[in-house]
Amino acid sequence: MRDREADRHGILERRGTSRLPESLQIEIDSRCNLRCTMCAVPRMVAARELRTLEPSEFRELLATHFSHARRVMLCGFSEPLMNPHVPELVQIAHSLDKRVNLATNGLLLTPERAESLVAAGLDDVALSFDTTRPETYRLIRGVARLPTLVENLRGLRRAVEQAGARLDIELHAVVSPRNIGEIEALVRFAAAERVQLLTLIREMPIGGQDVRSFTATFAGVDWTATAELARELGVGLLFTDPRPEAVAGCYWALNHSYVSIEGDVSPCQVASVDPEFRFGNLRDASFASIFESERYVAFREKVARHEIPAPCRGCSCVFRSDASQPAGP
Image (cartoon, rainbow, N blue to C red; front, side, top):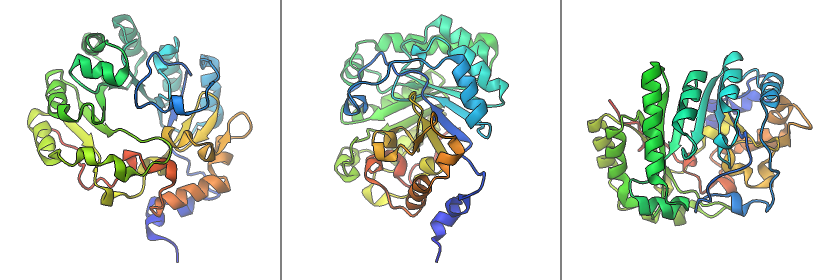
């Protein structure tokens, strides 16, 4: 008998069809200007190929493999703004009828770069913003540059307002024992800065550790009160249910794909840490053939049945959203 949950996600219907994911992440540079405490890069292979995705490569990648995609997220285990061509990449994606999101640590988002990105028509920006305290920022991100990040956020908002553009700005906070007591301050900061959305992402244990050992930190947080505060202040809030019993399937793994700068295809960044979940390389095969390969289909079928593989058990995306409804105006 076919699994009802897998059927609900359409996974068992996909084999041999063209129902490819409409949303994907593309890593456009292999370099980063930070060494964050929770980053998986130090746990990955010691030496990555240092390279930048050129505009011509990006256009070919989208045209050849991702004509079906409607949303492109420029992010990865790196800082996308290390790539000097981001405005041109945004324009290329738009010319191919795709919405473009940029996820950045924000330290390179100078006023000049903000203006160029707004002019290029960038649709969404997600800034890594874990704390309102400089010392906590230094502990998490490894540098004492929180004032730079705040100023760059404000410069981006000014660029959007001056251009009369429609660009959504959101903050992504990785929540860990280092900043668990600062969530209310983050909500109030987001409201004061007129940010549309604050997403709280639980720190992800990389390497297959069981998620249950990482949930104790969250037990004392009143998530209902947090959501109510956000709603009262007019801030959109997304967070995941931290209870171990809430573990379920992963919408992300079932509906997105991730392409590293090396061309490896995985369900997402977290899964890409494990070579077992790199299902093919675009240098050797088409995305469609990789996505419909036996191994990738089997992976999605397992996730749809809530059989969560080891690399995913520490990820907040595997949680059911019952207690994490968006709060906002």
